Image 1 (tube, helix red, strand yellow):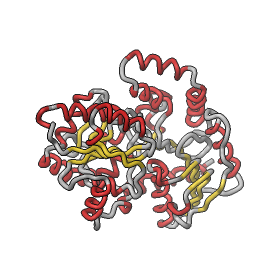
Image 2: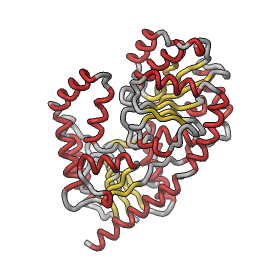
Image 3: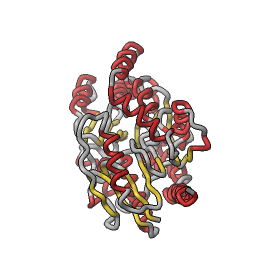
Image 4: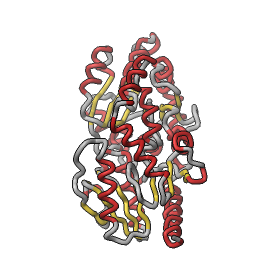
Length: 394
């Protein structure tokens, strides 16, 4: 098949959807398919050499108009070429297949309010959102994407997102294909795991005997770093844990100044390591003992899937579609409200128990093996083939 991908910026070092696009393109090319990428910028070193790149002009102007402009640029550029199937991964319209890796904007807007602790703050945030042009623009864009003809095939990466489509757009389930996210395990070879573990623990001033929790994110606020830091304070205030050799590694966004200041105010700065961008990410996973991802909204966090693939137990929330693959407490723990510092501290305390943590670590590999990247690829390939049949029928 001749397949076109549309995504504005593909820099796999940033993780998430951009890493996924690189993995999927690599697998499709290995299978003999021709893959084209329509984007404004990309990292050719992190993408397959056989990928066909189509440079689009940089999208400028107000934030609320940029997705509309990028979509139009994609449609104009793709009209000059013949593709068997076209795929959009975010705020684009007109493709045969839409695979919204970031979920629905309408759902995200509601869940994002939970970042604010207390009804008063959430009310103020709701009022501000009401006057946000980007919010109304993206809401309108979603209706154009999913409700106007020709209707695309829609792929979602969790049952949570499927339910959001029904709740916010009243779409019937028969229009939605649930294809759980997956990661390419080839990115996490373990032949040198122990060496990397010791090396990076040394660089981050972590002792070999420390119990290390990891949070990896670019949007620290949405992923719950503030309540996590407060939960660490609660954990260490408990008499049984005051001498615990616990350290939290914060990886991802290098702009962590406000959270470092919060850690200092809470008196836990010695227990937290802010390491910023980590490339390759497997060094952070290998250095850690478990992942803690108290997110307020994640359609299906790839970070969780990566951690499971690396044998790390996971603490996350019900607002994360990836929680659907867990079987708590066998392979991890799931909480409902990241602002419940006591409950989050309870989860951290459970992970301080080496026997419990070891049992969870053994179970995570079985969990990761239940849905492999190859299974994901085959399911997605079937969707692409359905899109080709639709084109021919039309």
